[in-house]
Image (cartoon, rainbow, N blue to C red):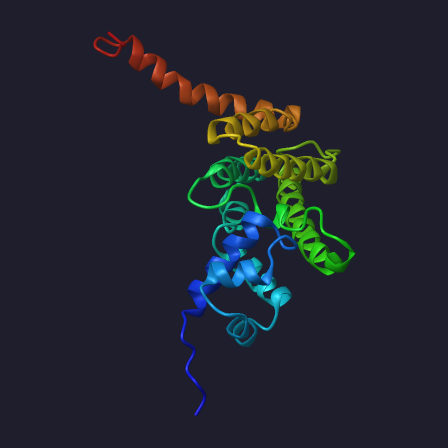
Length: 226
């Protein structure tokens, strides 16, 4: 009969994730991992294989938990602009949170790695490229719907917002607050291209129709501010 594992594997994985997030892949030694996880090296190897496979599992867990806000925002918002803005604002909150290490594991964990960690760098680069491609798809959606000009450089715009997100992660590691990062998000959204003239013209009557009842209510007796 196999000996029963004497520790909570899921809890140990969470602790390993936090260690990698805080220190990076290469700087986190097996000794530091086993100390953080509260287990001995043989238990780590038996449960997770080795450091590389433990890291890959930690990255998957990160994507399903702390980093899942990006996927949700891109899937749930009705327009590309709304999706990108939500990603930036939620990144500001998540990256600056003091409930866990600051920044983004996918962005920071393989910084300054040596040649022996090239596969880890490539793994994380692949995730970042997939995220950039997802941003571009939502920007393309706005072009297809006529909300952006047909000649919009969607690849360049996606790269710009990916760079902003990566910069926000670095800034949070340097001590930037949630408010600081929200200002970055606001300035970044000012770079969003204006809609085509035909779209602006179509939106204007709807905007005036929305404003008119409000103006009439303000002019009515008792409808003012005081």
